[in-house]
Each structure stands twice: as structure tokens, then as C-alpha cells.
Amino acid sequence: MSFINYSMKTKEIYLVAHNCDSFDRLFLINAIKNYSEQIDYKHIKFIDTLNLCKILLPNIKSYSLKNMTKHFNIIPGEHRAMSDTIALRELYHKLVKCLAEKINMNTDYILQSPSIVYDYIY
Image (cartoon, rainbow, N blue to C red; front, side, top):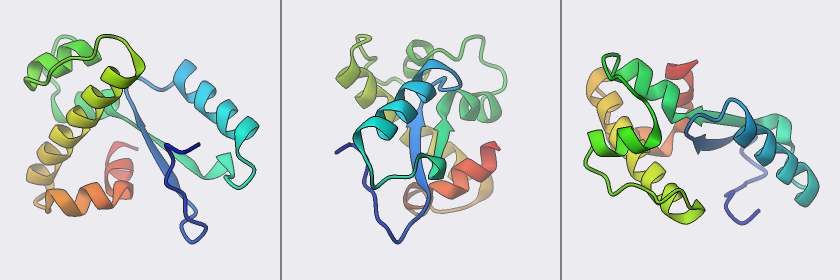
């Protein structure tokens, strides 16, 4: 689980995904259960960029990852894990910048405090 930066001091783990309400969420939780004894999956919180897009950009016709990368002029993923992950990271950063402007906070601070984004969505 090298993609998770986990600290015993911090109980919450925030994972960012696009449209993670079904398969992706179950897949990641099962992977964590099966491969990591030190991470309690009950502390995982998902930040769904699809939901964040809907809140911040309510007049977009399609919130697919492909369409959102086009909207923000991000090189789209090729529906492969690594390229989609890179596109998702860039999309998340753009969305956090929009959120920061909306709530008048520092973008870097929000990027380092994912609970702000999580609480904003949910």
C-alpha cells in the first residue's frame, strides 16, 4: 500500500477518486483489508472529485473525468491507471484552487488539509 502515506498519529486517511461511490471504493477497501494490517479501513475517507465538480461547477453537462480534464485543459488519461491518476491529481488541484477562491482560503493550505475538502463535499 505504498500509495497511502499513513501515520499512526493521524487516524483519517483521505483517498481522492473520481466517481468512487461503487466499484473503486470497494476495490480499494478490499485491497487495504487484504494487504495492510496496520491500516484500519474504517478510517478511510473518500474525496470524490465528481461530487466536488458538481458542487463547484453546477452547469456542466458531463462530469466524466475525460470531460472535466478537457474543461480544465488537462492532458486526459488514456484510461490506464497511471495516466488517469496523473489527470486526476491535476483535476483535484484545479478543483481545490476553485474551492480556495470560493471560500477565501489558501490553496496550499487546503491541499495539506484534505478534511476541508471532505467537509465541504459532505
